[in-house]
Each structure stands twice: as structure tokens, then as C-alpha cells.
Length: 82
Ligand code: SF4
Image (cartoon, rainbow, N blue to C red; front, side, top):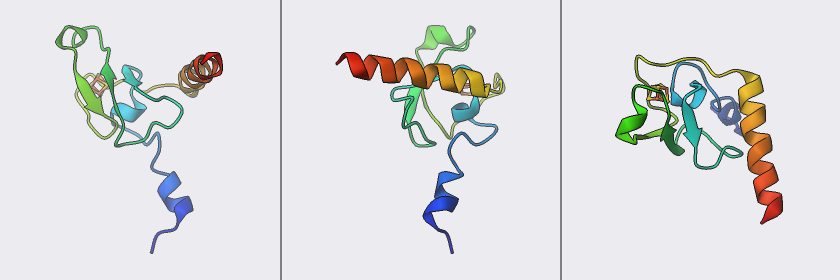
């Protein structure tokens, strides 16, 4: 049996695009495994890939909490300006 708190634990889970430093979700504040986003990995960027948080590839590099915070702060600032 799962509860809402169990569900929350799947956000920013390990070893998928959501946890990769090259994933730029369309909505960084609410990003989860079903969110779409751009893959900006230098070798893959030319393909303009749109991936979801649960995708993965062998170019995976773990995102840091600091990068997540920075991305979310930037998105919140952009929301305030609207
Ligand atoms: S496709 Fe690969 S490099 Fe791009 S965000 Fe996903 S895991 Fe990272």
C-alpha cells in the first residue's frame, strides 16, 4: 500500500534523466519522472532531444543538489516577473 509520502520519494530519483545534470525540464519547479525536458548533453544537443524524467542513456551524469536549487530558483524568479 502506498501513501502520498511514498509517491513524493520518486522525485529526483537516481540514474535517470530527472537526476542527470544535462536534463532541462520544461517546468523545473514541478519536475518529476513523467516531465518532458531537453537533453543538453554536449554530444546529444545537436539532436534536439526531448526526453522524460524516467528516460536514461549512457551519457548520464548525476546532477547535484546545488544545480537543482539553482535551476528551481531561476524558474521561480522568472515566474515572479510574469
Ligand atoms: S538522455 Fe542521457 S544525457 Fe540526456 S538527460 Fe537523459 S541521461 Fe542525461
